[in-house]
Image (cartoon, rainbow, N blue to C red; front, side):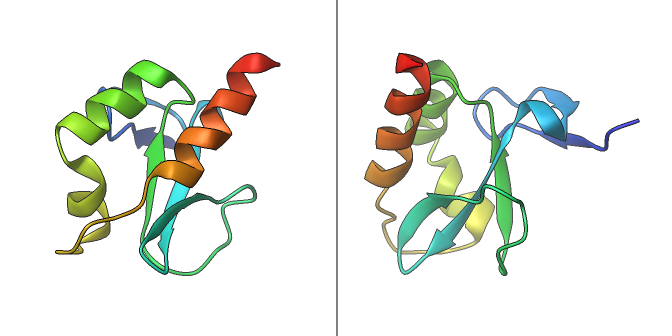
Length: 85
């Protein structure tokens, strides 16, 4: 059985294999492909709806426990590429 994680966008609990692990690196939100990068991680469904909800709720800063702004553009670009395939 795969461990369960919570999506920071829709707040639903699902198996971690369904979600993308994201981390904050140099004030940018990056996808952690293999879930091995150091630091505090968060989990997000690879969908535009969950991404938009997370941005609207300011969930990224809360999940990473940072007070300054985070650049979510790299994550948004990645989600666009995933949806094209």
